[in-house]
Image 1: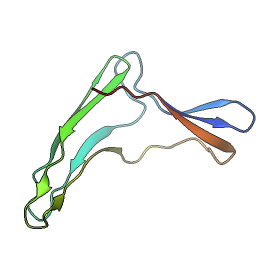
Image 2 (image 1 turned 45 degrees about the vertical axis):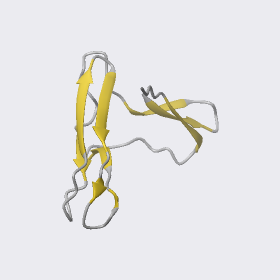
Image 3 (image 1 turned 90 degrees about the vertical axis):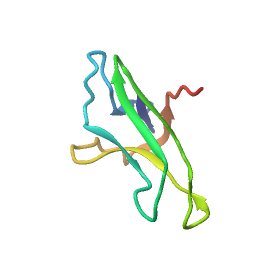
Image 4 (image 1 turned 30 degrees about the vertical axis):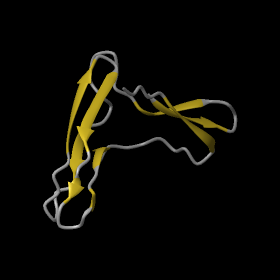
Length: 93
């Protein structure tokens, strides 16, 4: 989960993928769709994990790397204005 620690040491969750496999937000991938971008990615929510994987490839017309992202739109996020840091639990291979 992604969470932020407030100055009072209270943990405020900002993203949750839940034990049931249902997130508190609707998540999707976004790749480099312009100028012939060829990067690709997938996102699967399983159990309490969001499995995001993909490959960033050079955009031929720009001779520069493209991008892959995992994002959400809409929904509401908690007020984190009192926070002093952020903790992310991430696994990579």
